[in-house]
Length: 178
Length: 343
Image (cartoon, rainbow over all chains, first blue to last red; front, side, top):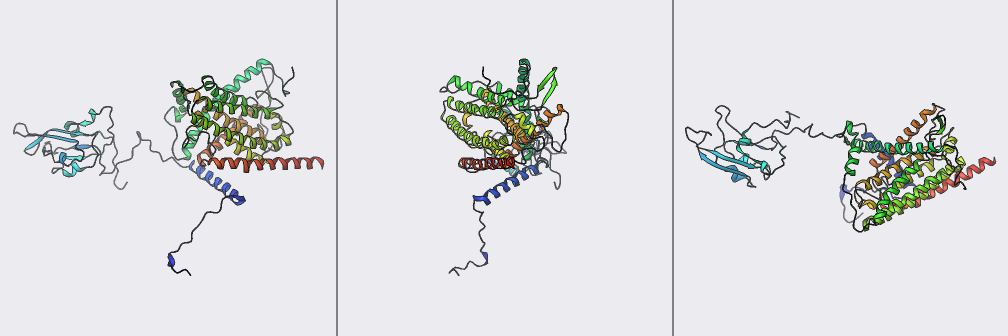
């Protein structure tokens, strides 16, 4: 018995058989056949490919896609009050907000002020969702759209109108329990 | 003039020219079918679809690729030797198609008011012809690698040459058993000898050695060291692009077809069907094509399965396993033949 007793945790090392010789040739042949069987069995299975532009993987409800700005459903006023907290929270500085005062004749948002300019530079955005967390009025949320490629960098700067617009239903949402 | 070889079945000169054109056309028509088959099968074996965008079920993919290659800019390294650089792919593809000429697709049939053999030409030295053109094909790779004027191409060419030469020995020796049993070098006569029993039964060892060496001869996985696409540069065709590279690739696929056809001819009874089934003569080419596609399927199947060998493993398999096996096979066959003849 060795001076150090490792107890019942000892596992015997399993080593592969020595290569070479008749046994090695026999094993190599057998393993080759086993490999051929494995690949042949794949022929009967359906490919697991998702044909992307036609088929899409449904996204989860909390998926962080392109941002959306929201309005109040009853009054149609914008939820954003131009506080710039989202811009402050943004780690890559991709949000630009210029606030302006609401007047009784020209009322855009429910608060005192509204966002006269609200731009998100999506070519810089890292989709971290901090803006959504920072917003005190749930005016900005992350949507489900992830198809944002474009030919021009300047086209990736989304303005307030684009963010407010109802997004095209391009990405399927995962159903409950899917 | 002393004839180089006896010709089994004489035909008019215009029939021979016509047959040459037909063989060339058929050989080059088989290629896209094999390419799309390879890519689709590989895809399915890896649980993906393979090409499925161009044409119905992706069937036009080879066409699209060839057009893409053909319109590429034709360029070569400044250090290249121009004549040989252009000649090398031509040598490769000419030798690859030439080997097709003697593969029999069937016996003689009645067309054009005369007996016409369903093969390019039936010479009494058929096997030697095949190996001669196989040997000339090496020049394609070696000249291509050397004339590129690039050290990587040159190293690749050396690597290919070492591999092809070592495996050609075993491949040739593997056939000796068949040739002794049949007692002839003519391919049609060898096929005729297999009327009762295919040579795969008595020559199983020879068949396995021939097939394994065939994999190495045609640079197919798991012996695709010459161009090992994943880890080495493209070997002797590193500096090639456009149609010249397509010529090399076509030659490679044609070689695969040739080796498959030779295996069919030597071991699987050519156009004969087992169990005494004797279809009309016009079915014979289809039988050969069916067997050919079985082998092509096997080549693709193996490519999708086995990982590439290390270079020293490749060499030791060729010299230490296949060559002794083939030699012993030839010896045993010779002894058995002598014993059977004397008893």
